[in-house]
Each structure stands twice: as C-alpha cells, then as structure tokens.
Length: 336
Image 1 (cartoon, rainbow, N blue to C red):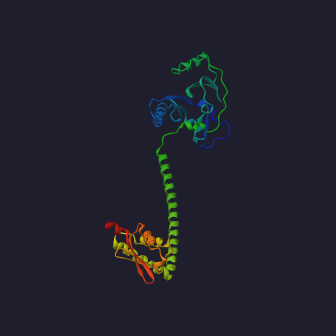
Image 2: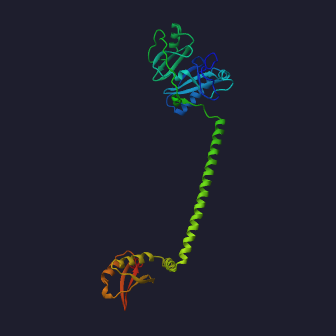
Image 3: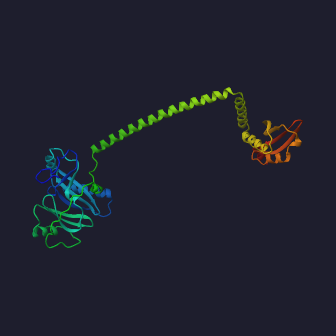
C-alpha cells in the first residue's frame, strides 16, 4: 500500500503491478447518471464527468459501476508515479474499494486516518477523509453535503469501525475501464494480424495435409483401376454398364439398370437365374434356361409386372428356355 508519506508499505512495488492506495491520497465522488441510458452510455458519461472534474494536472482515475451511475476515484498520478520510482503502476485501487460495502452512515478506520461514508442500496454516495477522528462540526458538514439522504444522519460521528482488506479481484466486475486509445487500437490490430497469420499457417498445414490425402486417394484409385482392368470379367461388366448408360442417354426416359435389377429380383423369388438379357426398342428381354413345365409362369409374370420398372410382360417359349419380354415402365406410362 502506498501511504500518504510516499512510502510503500510492504514489499517493493514492481512496474505494472496493481497498487493499493491509501485513502489519504484519494478523492471520491458519485456520478448519478440520467435515467434511460444504456450501460455503455453511462460509462461514456462517467468518463466525461471524471475528466471534467479532474482535481490534478495529471489525474489518475478509477471508475466503478453502480446501480445509479458510477463511483469515481481520483488521485495525483504524477505523485504516485514519483513514489513508485518514476514507473506508473498498471492498476491503482483505493483501499476503500477493498474495505467492503455498508449501509447508511458509518465511519471506517483506514490505514491512515478515518473515512466518513454514506451508503444507499449498496452504493457509496458520499465519502470524506480526515487525518484525525471527525469533530461534531466536521461530521455535520459532511452530513449536510449529502443530497436527500434516505436516512437521517446521527447527530455525532459514529465510532470508527475496523474492516479488513478483502483481497482478490471481485471489484473488477464493477470496473469501468478507460476508453480505448489509438495505442489500444494498434495493439488490437497487431493481435488480429498475429491471429490471422496463425490461422493462415494452420489452414496452409491443413491444405497440405489434404493435398497429401488426396494424392494417396488418387494412388489407391489408380491401383484399384489397374486391378479391375486386369480382370476380364470386370472388364465385360464395365462394357455392359457403359452400353446401358449410353442407351439411357439416347432413350431419354426410363432407368434400364433399375428395370434389369427388378427383373432379376423377381425371378430370384422363384429360384430362376437369367442366362442373358438385353434392352432394345424400349423393352427388356430376359432369357431363362428352363423348361416351361418347371416354371410358375403366371406367378413370374405377375411378379415382373408388379415392379415399378416393368409392365406388359409376355413370355416366349423356346426349346431349352423361356424368354420374358417386358416394356420399360416409363414407356408404358407414356402410352396410358
């Protein structure tokens, strides 16, 4: 704590670290904000009020948000910096902020002297410091300086009470920080630039990883393609698939592959395996190696016509097989 005698009580104060300031070195006033303002507007108004009423040529301030506005603390910034070896502290906190809130009228014993206080709804509305205990006249002057208090002041100053300093940063929840400066904006831009560079490096690494994955996938696909090309059976399947796709494009309607799959599934229900099949003139022809007497023709025809892809199924009997001809569903639908 920095005392009135310009002596730091406790350990040596380091540059930039928080400094606890004796109440003897501070001045206080509560700023009551007009109703209807947003929190941002209250903060801006409190900053303006603090600057307009600064009592020193180089004034340090601490603004604390209250339900009715803001509590404003002032101190001589030049004197504080000189007491800290010419290095201004990063954060200055008056000891009153750490003494705890109260209610109505009271006198608190400080590290140096005593402080008269008036509180309403958890808000410090008035504060006055004296090196010695308040006389009756000084107390009356302090009480008369409080505008429209909710409770009447005692006729004489109450006895000073001892309150411990509450360590910790709970007070920061109510701290109204100084407005951003050009230096802050430059620092923010530098931070944004660093973040952007980090993101760019991250995405570049991700892109390189994706490129490597894509190259690996390409090599795997090429290996599969080579194995398929070396297999004669797979080659024939690919040729037939290409022909069907070409037919689909020329026909313009109907799904040949779906029709063939439906026909194969219907025949499989009766244990029949197609020996061959073809599509021409909008019709699917499937040839089954079996004698007509061994087949449930009516049921097979009904099953083929029950599919969504085939209609008008006609069986044709051959010496060693039965051929089923069916129109594609799209063609039938166009004729209805």
